[in-house]
Length: 93
Image 1 (spheres, rainbow, N blue to C red):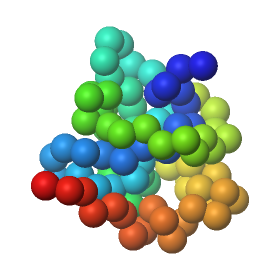
Image 2 (cartoon, rainbow, N blue to C red):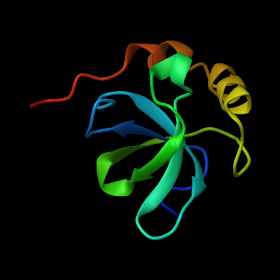
Image 3 (cartoon, one colour):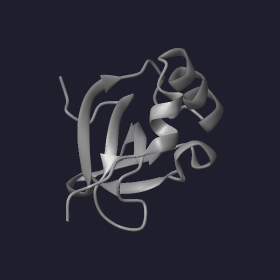
Image 4 (cartoon, rainbow, N blue to C red):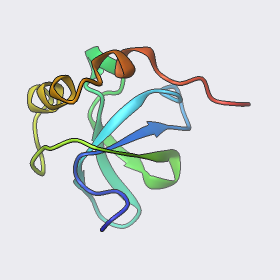
């Protein structure tokens, strides 16, 4: 089991999107993964993210590697996490 496997739900902990939920959509080289919110749902646009700036959660949604934002959104909706993604997390300072 990989910690940052495809479909893993994470919280961004650094940058302007800190406190927003995102989903790992594919592995990248080294310490990076490709994540998406999707942007209109949680504010996180599809981008490469350092795994040091992510906090993985136990939740894994069922998507294929490299899934587009519509597929990710449908999987989030099926898992009942839509409101969670919209609300975000308040991080301690």
